[in-house]
Image 1 (cartoon, helix red, strand yellow):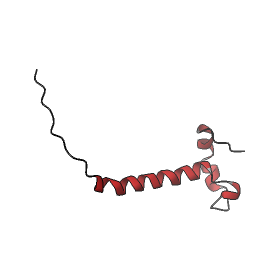
Image 2 (cartoon, one colour; image 1 turned 180 degrees about the vertical axis):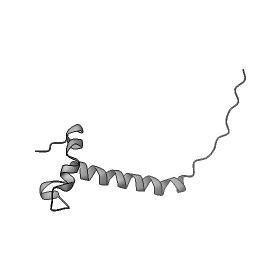
Image 3 (cartoon, helix red, strand yellow; image 1 turned 90 degrees about the vertical axis):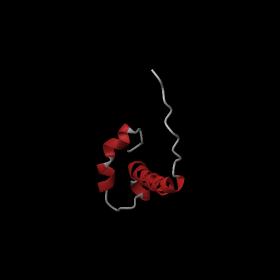
Image 4 (cartoon, one colour; image 1 turned 120 degrees about the vertical axis):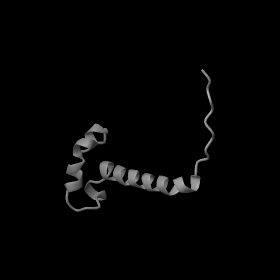
Length: 65
């Protein structure tokens, strides 16, 4: 059996960077809503976001009460 090497394809870094920044921004926003959206640091006045991610907070071991 012969093994043929696949040709190296350069990664288009300039095309990847905007998508990477976008994904990191979305991840940070999600982390904020799961970890810090409650009480004095809440963006929204009601508890909708807190209750929506309540079980996820417990699964990720964030203190909740």
